[in-house]
Image (cartoon, rainbow, N blue to C red):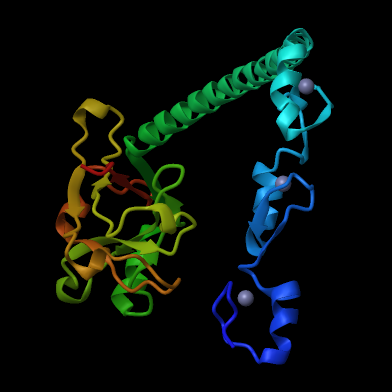
Length: 292
Ligand SMILES: [Zn+2]
Ligand SMILES: [Zn+2]
Ligand SMILES: [Zn+2]
């Protein structure tokens, strides 16, 4: 048989139990005895939201009124306790304002501290930027004093030691690591005629933060050791790496893969003139200009 309230079919013998205990659509009396008949499934929402006989908190509970009243009496409670509610609200407002003021003061102090710290940091960063700029705008000069040149030349001519090299040095404070080479009797194609000079890029500490490929002008100068600097006639030649060539790439090992420089730096004939070699000593200077 179909239930008269929810129309669901039930066995006749169970229909009465269904209607008395379970049927969601069966109207039942409000548990607060307000006199209303409500379908069973809506009882909870009636009690919580509508029933005039449900006991609820005063709407001013957050201001401090702890009164519990029947829903139907809320209106008259509000009317009769206007003064009390105002006083409570006023006190709560003062307390909240005080707390807010305290919070604002704390925040203001924090902001002040952060601003000070921030401007200190900014000026530090500015100073470092200037430092970096200054360092990268300075050229590096490396002077190599070569003693006992005649013996070195003899070794080169005999083929036992065709080149000598300088101590490694850095271009600037955090720059490239370079080393200068002299082939006193010339490199392969210039044997017996020229002194060749080269440099090699070595694996350095700052390679990771440097621009690659290496593209800076390197000027080699053989210093004329005249007493009077005005009369000096230095030999000067430069080398500029082609940035697209692999010869300016970054060194990946300590093995020197590429040599760059000037194969015909100074002829043997010219080397014997003036005062390029004094007391069997020559001075070779390498100057590395900043980029651009
Ligand atoms: Zn039913
Ligand atoms: Zn009710
Ligand atoms: Zn109240």
